[in-house]
Amino acid sequence: MSFRIYNILADRFGKDTLLYFDDTLNPYIQVAPELIQTLCIFMRYNPALKFSFLFSLCGVDYPEKNQITMVYHLFSMKQKMLWVLKTSVRREHPELESIESVWKTAGWFEREIYDLLGVKFTNHSNMKRLLLPDGWVGHPLRKDYEEPLFYHDMETSRHRVS
Amino acid sequence: MLKTELKHLKPQVHTFKEEMILNMGPQHPSTHGVLNFLVVTDGEVIHQALPNVGYLHRGIEKLAEQTPYTTFIPFTDRIDYLAAMFANHVYVLAVENLADIEVPERAQFLRVIACELNRIASHLISTGALALDIGASTPFVHWIRERECINDIMESICGARLTYSYMRVGGVSQDINEQIADDIYKFLDHFEPIIDEYNRLISFNEIFIKRLANVAIISPVDAVNFGLVGPNLRGSGIEMDIRRTISYSVYDQFDFNIPIGKGFKGSLGDCYDRYFVRVLEMTESCSIIRQALSQIPKGDIKAKVKRKLKIKENECYTCVESARGEMGMYLLSDGSDRPYRLKIKTGSFTAMSIVEKVSQGLMVADLIALIGSLDVVAPEIDR
Image (cartoon, rainbow over all chains, first blue to last red; front, side, top):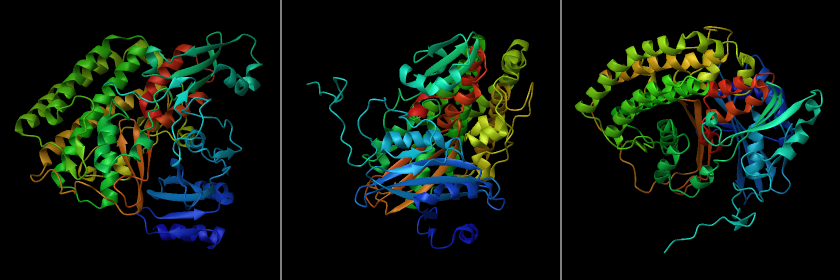
């Protein structure tokens, strides 16, 4: 089933650009960051695929590989199946094309990723922090994040009462 | 937030002569938790309402990376305090998927019973609070009374009334005995007629219908585009329920309908549709609980799981149909005893993002109806 979909994608984009991994529970496709928007549009609107739902979009930090991987979970009502796309950007000055134009819901997911992992999305309508205050320093979901001891002169650590 | 947001608003603001900028929340009674809206109004008409979330961000995803698999379950209760059972469920399902643990069938039935009871409790709060927000305070008190019965049942099942931590990796913590099963039957016998009574009291009330019908219509296209899930999506007429679409646990053994919006009293996808889908869902949940209680097999309630669980490198996305729609967890393991990354996707998060679009042109009082009908819970947005 998932191989059939991979074949449709490979016919359109070529086998070299799409790396298919099926050693995990949900098989996934890894693509270059430049391709992600085109691929999303294709997967959403192609009549044979119709992945009309974006279930989730998140980022994972890999300091030892020096990259942040974005994981897209798409769902198709027609095929009743989940599909996973991955793309990686470098950890310094990470930038990626926004897919807000494909799924509106990606807008908030991307703001959350920018907030917690520091990946900037280009062509985004409102690229600002979502959960943390605007003046916050650092991106907490990075593996090397250290919590600041003070925020606006307020202590962030909790003293043990003894 | 004010000054920085204004820049973003500018292009549309200048067309209005007397716009006024108001802060709704963070302590507004109808926002259900700490949630702030920046509302730009022209008289009574809302020009734009920008949600400002994050007041309840506790970094649960970061905490997960520092907590062993089996000890993370109490944290999941705090994601959504009105429907804690679903967060329990999706987390243990995710871990079981990765660790390849077979769950005894009795435990799966117990999970379904607990989840459906919790769904009723959550919908009671949701529909009652919606009525309360738009000015009818009696129904809320009635629904709280019914919810108390569920809380009592939950207390006898697992010892907690709200933050259950009932599920364990590989099963559940407690079995139910004859007495508790009888109590659940008694509750259902009492509750099912009450839904009709409630419908007569509020659902078919002329004023209530006028406040909700044809208000804040979300088209099916928008609903999919903005990633709405659960009753909000079904209110727009799309028949998508994770219990049916991606069958998990033992839901494939039960016979139940999926109510969808049909423009019951107005147009498809208005506030009334979203409200009434929830009322109809409560009846379906009652039927599922009855079926589960009658079919429940005997046996173990927990599989043998190592105390210190280590999972080799793998990843999976697991989702369940929570009271607020599809709730998913993306779990990545790296061979240690704690997750490498846990992403929690919740229904309220995506529902909140549509407010900015739908609120344009609404009356101020209708914004309250919109937020109430979307059934957002602030801690679930912020995690």
